[in-house]
Length: 275
Ligand SMILES: [Zn+2]
Image 1 (tube, rainbow, N blue to C red):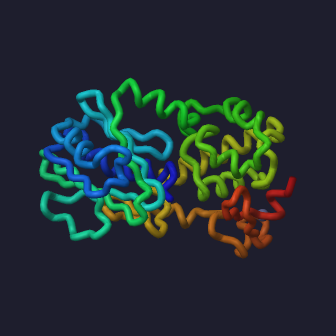
Image 2 (image 1 turned 90 degrees about the vertical axis):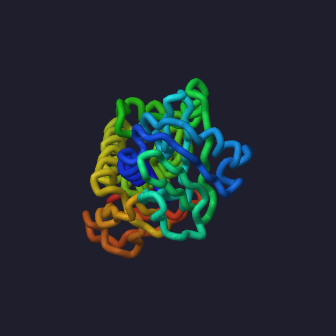
C-alpha cells in the first residue's frame, strides 16, 4: 500500500499534467470508487472543473478546483494513476476512471483490488473532514513535543500507535518498521512509556525515513507505480521492512518477524530491545 513518500511521488508527477488544466470530460466506470454516490453524478460534477493545485495530506491526494470544490483521492491498496497523451492510454482491464484534460492529456486511474476512493468536497467541508482523521504532517511543523503529547495517553504498542493516522499522518507498515529500527525502539513498547530522549529519537527517525522515501521517489513494490511508470528505489534503503532473517545493518543479528496489532513487523532483537 502506498504510504506518504509514494503518494507524494505520485503528486509530484501528476501536478505538471493537471495544474492549470480543465477537465473536459470525466468517466468513472466503478461504483465502488465513489460510493455511496453515483459514479455518473460525480463524473458530471468533475467535468468542466479547472484544476488549480494537486496537494497531498497524509496518504490522500487532493485535486483542488477553481470552483473551490476538491476531489479527495485515497489509493488504498492498489490505486495508481497514469498520464498519457490523448488517445494513447494502453488498454487496461483494471481502469476505473479517466479524466480527459483540455491540454491534450488523459489521466487514468487503475485499481486492481478496488479499495481506492474518490470523494468530492466543498472547500469548507474538506478541512474539518481531514482534521478529524489525520494528525500532523511528519515533515511540517511537527515537533518532538507534539509526538510526545500524542503518544503519552496511549497504551497501544508503538507499532500500532504510529499506524494510527491521528497520531501522525502518512505512515504505514513499511515506514513504521523503518522508523522504529532507526530509533532503536521495540515495536511492542507501550506508546506512552517513552522517555524524552526516546521520543526525540523516534521523532527524528520518522522524519528521516519520510525524507529519504521522498528523495528515493518511494518504494517500488507490487501494485504500486508512479504515473509515468518510473520506479522508485526506496526499497534499496530498507533496514527492517521485508528483511526478516537477514543480518541487521547495525549489529549483524538476524532480524526477527513478529505480529503486532495484526501486522507483520520486522525488527532487530538486539538493537531494539523488548519491553
Ligand atoms: Zn541490530
